[in-house]
Length: 192
Image (cartoon, rainbow, N blue to C red; front, side, top):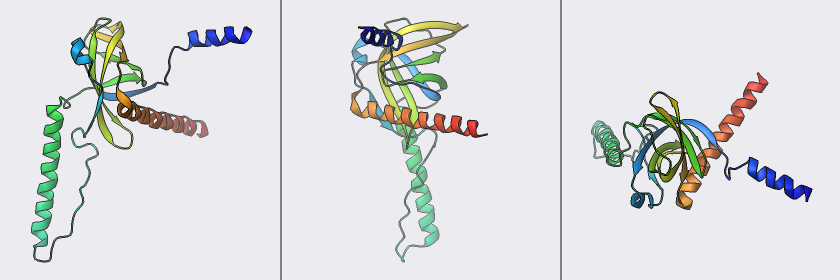
């Protein structure tokens, strides 16, 4: 009976099902209607303003093609790829997104916003994360808590809706990578 009471107290004390990490990430949060919020979260491969742009694989030209012309064509192709990637990101609303302080887990997040929300508001969240590669997560959730921190700034707690395995795995991979970085930094500080 004693052990069961301790277990119940531990469950009450620790409400979180997933671990959390804090970071500064390009993040967009906006209010949406309930029908839109029923969509599943998704990942959008892509970059922000050329972050981590792949250099491209240069094929060797045939002997009949002038090497200078070949380098120029390769450079034009690389620039067109960057332009098309940026157009794709712009069409998804993923350009000019401010970096925000977030505390994120696989079940929800806390973020500092310039815009106030009400509890029970449905929101769409777009976050650029980098684990092995850079990509955007588009998540949907419900505002659970709002606290005004400073004048015209709010701390918003959001619980994510169902996001699917691909998105949850991507988010978990990012969080594990981030935790590993934080542990390595703290170990390095202890050594100094």
